[in-house]
Length: 158
Image (cartoon, rainbow, N blue to C red; front, side):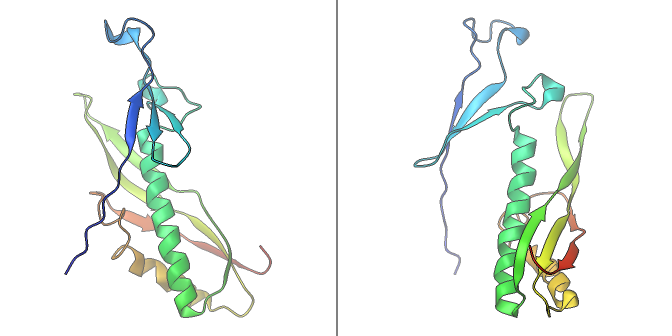
């Protein structure tokens, strides 16, 4: 039987310059993510849509969540398989489209982890782990676009 988990967050719009949404250019596309007991994350809209390029936007957060979920499952499965990971970093990218109506969506994402393995690890076993993750990763199982991976490995000190 499935076990439900709940998650909570508070989104607070911070972009009122004094006129509210009197017109389209009267307000900033900024907000805070407030999760109980955790640091506030200051966010903005995609810069292509008038957002602040120095702040994370929803698209950044989604691809980052997808990558982080994959990483955490990878580390779990690697540990179970006796694969010793010394370092893991990812530079994921995603491709989206925006229709003439303004509606947008992601078309696909590619995770590009660079993983450092301890001496003696079997790279083929380490690489095979990725294929299993989409079956269990909460985020990957929830998105409606294909997710692929292109991992690179090195052996030795992190």
